[in-house]
Amino acid sequence: MRPEDTAPPAAEDAQAPVGAAVAGPDGGDGEGAQVAETAIGPVRIPPKPARAPRRRAPKLDELLASSVEAARSALAGLAEEDQVGRHVGAVADDDRLVTHRFAAALPGYGGWEWFATLSRAPRSKHVTVCEVGLLPGQDAILAPDWVPWSERVSQEEKVRLDAIAAGEDPEKALARFRGEDGESEGEAGDAADDGEDADGVDAASDAADPDAGEDRPA
Image (tube, rainbow, N blue to C red; front, top):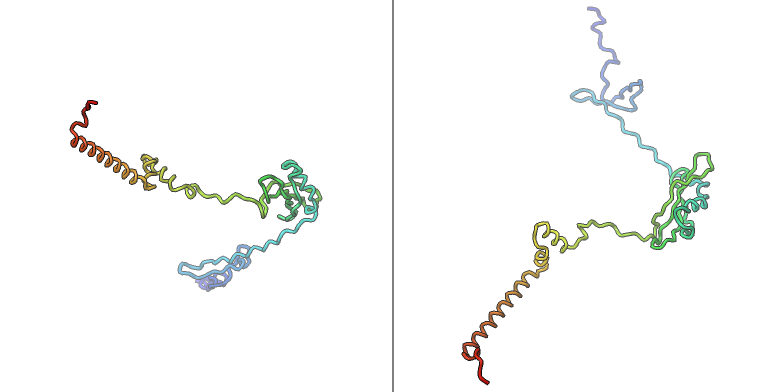
């Protein structure tokens, strides 16, 4: 046996110690990756992802911000001239992208505003219209929040529909719900008692006067 056959393993073949950086496929340090020793062998721990750079606020483009008349003209196909009021302002949506707003003079749309979004290509002075429309302003009259039918339906309507689904008479179900069923039965019982009392009075009168049912001579 030759001495080189029993030589210890080279340093590059030894396991990396716990917490040591792992070389990447390109020979780098693996972007800070580490390896931990476990019962099943070394496990590579990936590095923490870097935070995304904070995006800066878009800058208001001077050319687009000054193109008020171009934005007003873009609304010609959407609204009448007298329906587009004063210029409310311009907001930068992104780089070289600006939205102009105009007061809307429309019946039933108090506080709403027309808008026209303009843009331009880099190093170009040609203004392009991207979008036009009508949006609510801060003081706009809006519809109330939508409420599901199951929450806004009355309890009586639920009783009626449940009775129909069960094959029952909805009127009787509503009467029970309103507490009218017992009252109607009580009224019917009182009427029957009154009829019986009237029949008893008539029978007693006939017994007291046997000739009451016969025709008397004048």
